[in-house]
Image (cartoon, rainbow, N blue to C red; front, top):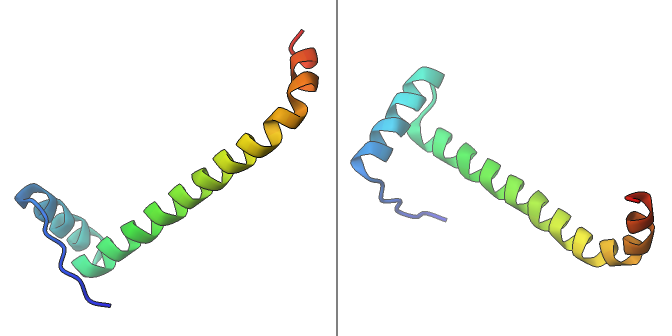
Length: 67
């Protein structure tokens, strides 16, 4: 799927510099950044969900351990 991404001048310049340093296209660098963002936030969301669901089950044990 094609899309247009509008960047500020500073963002475009930073992306250009990063792509030159890595000898990769600006598109490759941007796509990798998006993949990393999605992966990081997906893990954080999963951890939050597990903690919300499981932590109450062990609240009493955790409270006792903290004493």
